[in-house]
Amino acid sequence: MVHIVGAGCGAPDLITLRGKKHLENADVIIYAGSLVNAELLSFAKKDCDIYDSAKMTLEEIINVIVSAESENKTTVRLHTGDPSLYGAIGEQIREFSIHGIEYDITPGVSSFSGAASSLKTEYTLPDVSQTVIITRASGNTSVPDSENLVSLAKHRATMVLFLSTGLLDKVTKELIEGGYSPDTPAAIVYKATWADEKVFRCTVSTLKKTAEENKITKTALITVGDFLTSDFSRSHLYDPDFSTEFREAKK
Ligand code: SAH
Image (spheres, rainbow, N blue to C red):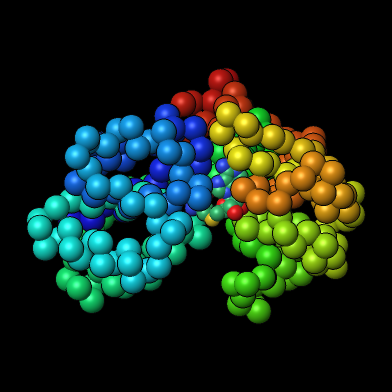
């Protein structure tokens, strides 16, 4: 059995109770060493075999898992943040199917959630934006043309860009071409929820400069949108004049 587990995006106590239980019971752990907090490995059994997938190919990862399966061992595949986003688990799952290997997935706190906590804000403010676009700039991994940044920018929704810190010239140009004004608020969140987390607030037009001045080249998210500064309306959820499924309006 393979448990794909989301490690959370940095602080080790952000792993779920279920994820921690899987780590404690694992015979083999393969963790994404480039981004997973190594403190999580302290939950492993003393005799657990631990591999850093940052140094491995897909074939090597699958070989380790297939050999663990042949010995009836339990493997945890520990991914950063939430495994469903930019985790390359799809190609592993395809191999599990080919080899008849049973697996399940435990979600984790994604860095886009971690970044909102670092920014101490809400992405979905009433009358500002009710949509969060999670995407990346097209680079080594191409993005389907129908999802190009210019077209996504037309919505002027809250946007969170993964894996894009090295492409900020292009990002800025496309965001402005699409419809964000150059002075739309933006923020670079570096290592959200880690001890050395850093937050830099800027605008769409100063993203590149801000990253350069602060030497941020990786492990960062770019967030864009008026959620970072705007005035907004209060919600109906806690409005005394509105009834909800759980509460009558105050007369
Ligand atoms: N599955 C992960 C994303 C993996 S892709 C998740 O849900 O967060 C790796 C990219 O995620 C990094 O290049 C960076 O853009 C972002 N990232 C991961 N952890 C981060 C963190 N703690 N703070 C800011 N960005 C982070």
